[in-house]
Length: 279
Length: 314
Image 1 (spheres, rainbow over the protein chains, first blue to last red):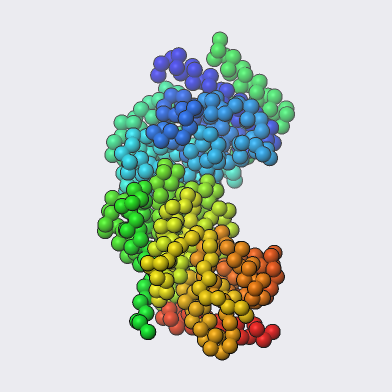
Image 2: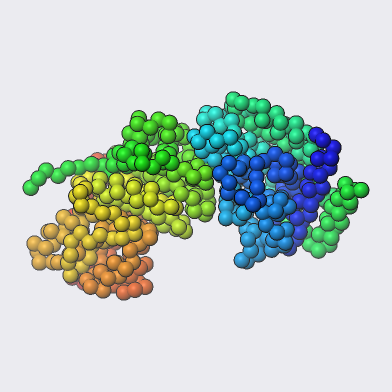
């Protein structure tokens, strides 16, 4: 990937992470861990891959994204704010009464393509969107982001079967494999592994990716585009809480908001990262 | 008297989809391995490119329908009521109801008249479940004419609609040429002043028959057909409560949460009068021929007559 572009994406992703911290801190609730693990991928998609226009969020030809792991809405909202779908200030009223930004994605928010959050459902809606594209002969792509814990839901595998059988080659599912879910490591709760083998067995083209390396993200999505006969599953190896030292790989940060002290520390770390990128 | 023509409303559903497909280009039909039974097979044969079998996976089918609707299609997600409203309830709520997507749910084999398949497949809870979803429209047509009109009305309406169809062939009581379907409006089938029988689905015909018997015995019964259970025609219900002072409801559904509950909720607010509910009591069904089951569970003109008389005596 072009070095300049890479640096721009890194900077944007850093700002996206700040938005995640800002949002969950002000909400006094929310899910920072899994939001931080998908921040780079979302940044790459909205700023470098997807056909999307904040001035025309309902354009029929746009690419779509369904955040099936809807609890990580802070990351999606933060990316959409950075992109200009709404003001960055909105993040400060995340989850507040009367606010635009609901606790989980809502289709009525500019830039949000589907309401989601009850796990396992978003992938089915993404299948429907991909099917509509096929019926109409449109060229848009549909991306669905799932959690590795989320794929314990049986509906995900109904959808996986459907997508392969209906040859939804315009569908890319990204599984955020950060290895942690609410009750602990996925390997200890009720392991969905081997994830790659499962998607392959269900008839998908499977790609693995480092979720925090833009060169590798670019490689994975470029490969995904070259696949013409199957839906694509990208299993991204990620770090829950990525970018904030004390949140990284800590299951406790799945659904806990930072307090003032933690907020200050997280923002200081992210500001330092941004400054380093800007120097 | 001319021979009574009988037809199952699921048949009407399949035929209506086929008949409307040419006019409504965005109409898409989904099924979950039950096309022969839900009668979407009629559509599939005529429009194979617009029919998608989702396999035995109702949860995913509802989600796929949501995604199709989000892209401008008008999907008819079709399966038995048990699986549409029961198994897939939470997907219908969160993926269709919450985003208020333009999905039509064609739920066949509703109620006890499923017959021999027994309790596992006799869905007496679907109206109750669907009523709790904000913005969900619920239509329970009484015969072939109304069922076909309901499918067209659902197509012309922008928003989620749950349509309830039966397996059993039931008398065609409306005249196709003159029938007008108005979403959310009850139909007075017969006027009367002593009691109002509010019925839905296959119980409408039973109510009409019961009213004739009552008439012969000097009891003037009004019969109201409520095809749209949500939004309920509260204006008409309250008018009937005021004018007749007694309401008996009749539905092929649990007495908990269905038409009877909806009517009772309405009249307690506008004109509290006794509401006596006829439906499936708080119990499961069992196997047997549909017509025998309907009799056994009191879903008959005879039981309506008996219930009305008893209520008037009180």
